[in-house]
Length: 413
Ligand SMILES: O=C(O)CC1=CCC(=O)O1
Image 1 (cartoon, helix red, strand yellow):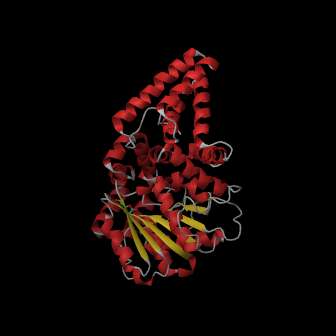
Image 2 (cartoon, helix red, strand yellow; image 1 turned 60 degrees about the horizontal axis):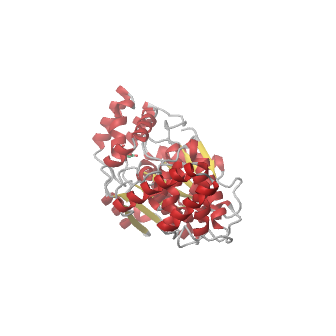
Image 3 (cartoon, protein in one colour; image 1 turned 135 degrees about the horizontal axis):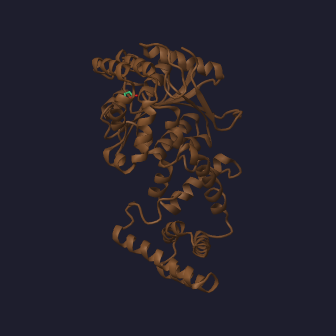
């Protein structure tokens, strides 16, 4: 097989000591399925994403393939790029390839983070049948059913554009490449490899995964010498799509622990605010504290190739720099923010920052004083509108008790 299409992100050239992450996707996914995690991971690691054969922009040889053929292609690409040992992270088929790589060529792998995968995924006949279907009718014929297993039904219903995009991604996979990968899964049995895995393994399961339910991940975590199982609630087969921030945090904590960094990934690398990595980590923590986890999770989940650079920018510069400065406390910063947004008539941002101001300790009465003060300097119409919008937020909070349900003005950033 020819070397695989790849994308490298993060510090380039990588300074001495910066670990390299290898990210491998599921059957039917291209490397852009990792887009929501890239900014967070690349702030502190070198991140190498590969397209499996026939997926994304990688060429497809004629099938059938064995899992070792996929491992050969990955190993050849690592050699071409001269990466040295990597922390291998894989979803489903990507996890199977990573596991086999670590068993077969242990010098290449420093740790494994395996999402929604299996050491034995039968029945083989089901995979051979899917390969026949795809060769006869194309990948578009299976796209709807495949994506139906990737996301929980409620999440899929709330994100129709994402579902359409994922179906298009599956339908774009080369028919022969997809069928060959199905045949690789049909012939795969990694159970004998598990006791020989010499690196720490994080096995992450989606609690509602219909394709590789948690017992598949538990079997891996139990059989490897150094394994840990994490089960993520409200997640189906491709949980990094539905829980992008959680997936990035799990990988980061795992890799830091293996590298000796240990501890809480949101605080460990925040000591040095002169680096992009430190600003990103501190920014993400502050953004979560001020805007709330639910908001930040939605923003991260909604990140696309188009918006990824902007997301990274606001995390590092707004939240990792200006909001970190010691000269004003968060109450004061919220006061200024409300006044400016009122003056500019930035309605969505204003509603979001009414919530943020409450989190930062301003009272409802103080928010009212700020808006009334604006009436003098920004004009009565601007303040009048701001009062109406703030009242809407207060009413919603009274109804929802800040349960994390989406609130007015929460759809942006
Ligand atoms: O496509 C599926 O049904 C689930 C799956 C198994 C291996 C993989 O990558 O996805």
